[in-house]
Amino acid sequence: MKGGLVTRTGRAVSLEGRPTGREHGPDAVVAAVRAYVDELAALGAERFGAAPAGVGLAVPGIVTATTATYSANIGWRDVPAEEFVPPGVPARLGHDVRTGGLAESVLGAGRDAGDFLFLSIGTGIAGAVVIAREPYGGSGGWGGEIGHAAVWPSGEPCACGQIGCLETYASASSIARRYEARSGRAATAKDVVSLAGAGDQVAAAVYDEAIEALAVALASYTLIMDPSLIVLGGGLSEAGPALFDPLGKRLAARLAFREAPPLRAAALGVQAGMLGAALLGWQAAGVYDAGRDWSLDVLRGGAVS
Amino acid sequence: MKGGLVTRTGRAVSLEGRPTGREHGPDAVVAAVRAYVDELAALGAERFGAAPAGVGLAVPGIVTATTATYSANIGWRDVPAEEFVPPGVPARLGHDVRTGGLAESVLGAGRDAGDFLFLSIGTGIAGAVVIAREPYGGSGGWGGEIGHAAVWPSGEPCACGQIGCLETYASASSIARRYEARSGRAATAKDVVSLAGAGDQVAAAVYDEAIEALAVALASYTLIMDPSLIVLGGGLSEAGPALFDPLGKRLAARLAFREAPPLRAAALGVQAGMLGAALLGWQAAGVYDAGRDWSLDVLRGGAVS
Image (cartoon, rainbow over all chains, first blue to last red; front, top):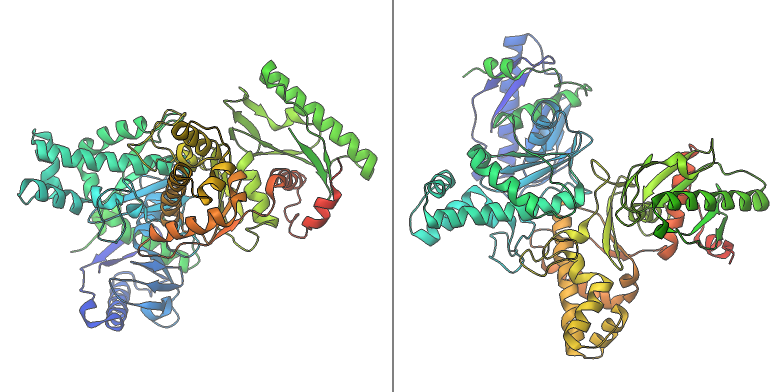
């Protein structure tokens, strides 16, 4: 886990990461988070001379603002937000990808768009459906699983047990896996993108299939949700024009009677989660307008190693 | 077009339909709507002794609350709501399917569900994404076009110009068209459902493909939007258990790591559009809590021929 302190005006201090200790079970993870929050509070007392006004936590799985409902990875069920923080400190939870989407909405690539999709393409694929600037998690916190929407419903089996999920064609790990399966050579997704650009036929085919899968899923999302913008984040988005140019063309080709929304690269990178958690922390403290005046340069400069 | 009068407490009077005159161009349609609204106002003066407090209009195409932005069928562009009503009467526009979704949300099958999908399966297929009881039209009013989400992206061409749209497999008109193409016999979708139940192999195959297409689209919707409920309306929903039973099973089979939301039949039938427009009319008049106490029996009994 990673964390940091962010002041009301956007001065930031990050703290080195800690293991979650999930091999010791869910209670150990809750205790490790609580200890890390205590460390951060001590750092805050030292740097800013103040106790935390609020704490925001981005967690995986199913989550509401007040409860970490379920995580298959960690194994916890129904952990109240209060268990992660010292007594009396207000806390607010968020889903990890939706928290990144919140940061992109308030101070990142979506800051001029009220209604957009933040799509994170990394080891897995997940989305934050942003409506009126707020990530929308659905009726029970299970929303945003666009990585498991079927793009080829008679296609390849996904590790999740379904057939033809977007993620099984287009995540960074799937691109690497599918390239190795066809070529016999291990490679990262970044390698595959480079190889495709250099004329490797197997890499070009695998990458092309990933782009087409993304186009199919994003076309359906566009038709149903009419976003003003699609923000792409996660490791694969670092491919830059090698991703955005073909995907933009394929998305437009999949839409006949309406225009495609623009694609834009996420602005906050790996900091999106921490910044989103900071916004949740300020919300927990009753401050709902924090963040829009935060300067990214200050934030980057303010991190301590 | 059809219309009626609905009082604050849900007493309703419907007026016989009128042609829109769309063969004479968009200006003629606006004039015909305006004349029909005048007729309704006169009927209201006679029956209730009062001028309309507000007017709601459900229109096709791209629409916001204040402007009929575009309709391919009618040909209009950017018609302000005021042009449809007498001077000084407040008016509010809604998309036709979303207006039906509003009625189902406030007083129909979704009245106990804040966040659900209303899917209308008729000549075409379209959805109303209902969030916190309100239909959500997207960033520009283009949302809800789930009928044109691709379910078989390498499949059959759709009339819209895209490939493999849900609508081209599963709308009532597509079911009829696909049966006729394979059997050489004309039939309605209702006939095809009956024939499939009676053991006709061609009908069973065509209907099975429609059910599977619906399951694929609704599984993706569920994963992304996490609705608490899916309400099925339109002509095909009248098939009852012949639709709901196989679709429920197929939808569950398409979801591996989460449960399927329940499927429920729309409660308001063809009246959903008029009731939703009545709710919009009351909203235009500043009354946002109308409808929840309206009795359907009274409404059905109150209609005049």
